[in-house]
Length: 251
Image 1: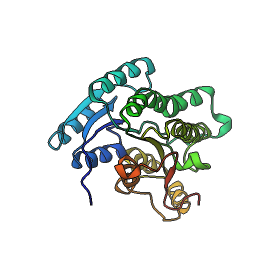
Image 2: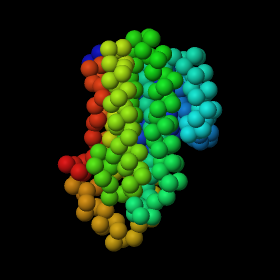
Image 3: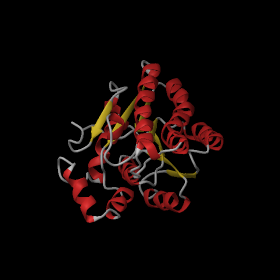
């Protein structure tokens, strides 16, 4: 197996469950990391850990504060010129019926999932294209491919929008050396998701498990492989694709 060319990766929401492990794997491969997260303590803790392996910059910021985030991202691009971008912000474990949703639910989830991903690509994509190389990975959800047992219509709509937006971006970037793809995870036992599961009643837990073809949630370790592939040099002919990591859910 060839050794990856050392590059710079920007991870948005780096201190979260799946991206934390992606960050560790990229550090092991020797990439420089820019870790962007609003949880100052968590992102600095991760930066300290990974700083033993590679060069790491921690940036504390809220990607949903679009004007401020755009300025921070512009500074990151000017200083580091990242050629790998992973957008891992966004998630919702609330089961809310469509009739109980409000416009606030839609505004918030589209900001967290769609607009936040767009602003990062807007700032990073042109520099990647100018440099002739880039790997963009956006996080959607298995629910965004169809429907969800575990969330709500606003969240599913936002994740479906992430998929459509990424496909359009991939089309516009095709031929520049920059590819843009989506990973659509099903139920993965991150701390947040596992915590939500534990708060369910025993009857509800049995109902959830009965809906999962494999009878279990996926592990974080199982969730990172496809993300890492799409970050790699070997993903150069994959663009506008959606990789499902869902244990057979919604087949």
